[in-house]
Length: 193
Image (tube, rainbow, N blue to C red):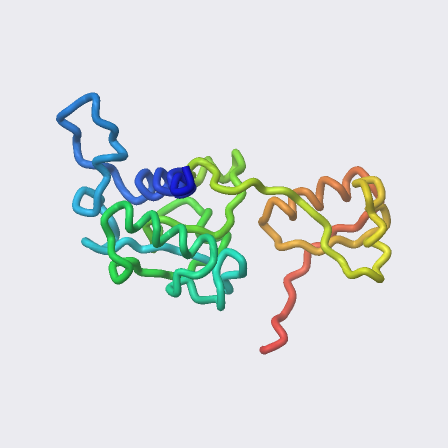
């Protein structure tokens, strides 16, 4: 059972990468016939995997998806291996989080960037079965008044900071609508500019 963690991701890559070759034996599973030589990928013999930049730990280590370190990096290589690709046949591309979720042509065969599955997103792209559970939490310092928050009601008068376009952003807007907390949308200028 230990090695079954990759199965949902295998289904994602197999279904989003391409259609499989027809199966002669109707009792055979389509997933068993999804192999490298039957997948219509962007580049023949290569599977292209997209992720955001930067790519954060523990999903990716060192902002380098090619090293196979971190959960999603290791998952991508494991799925690719189960489809018959060698590590050298896995190509990585950087795709902005929201860009990967937009409808239309893609620069990748599959993308792994901790996407929460929502109905709105399902209308634009195909998802695998989930391979992790998403929860929303408040992260703060020990000295912040927010450190004493124990319920959503306690978030009154708290300013929340979240990434725009994420399910955390949606949750913050919903919290702000039902309490006196503030949710403002700003596009920060990176410090390095």
